[in-house]
Image 1 (cartoon, helix red, strand yellow):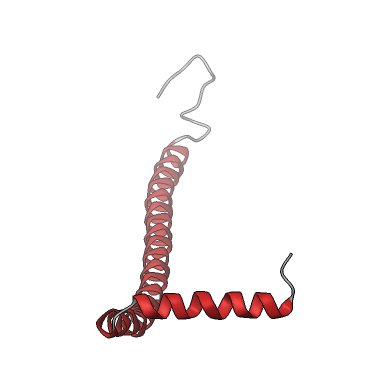
Image 2 (cartoon, helix red, strand yellow):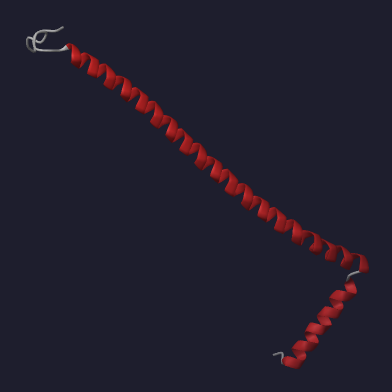
Length: 104
């Protein structure tokens, strides 16, 4: 079982062994990769979220416009049919209507 002193010694030995295996070039490449990847990941994450929100807003706006257009078409159709019904109803009066067996 490792106690604190042995554990510290073990960690330091592994650190020295790891540091000894990497050249200065490798250390610089790793450092620059970390420095460059951080902002790139941040920018890409923010861009993705912004794009996702924009697409969602466009889909919602498109759906709202389609509903408004459909409502307008239905209103126009029912208004025209109501006008036709009113016109036909105005043609029927007591002298014209003789009962259900007669047609105009």
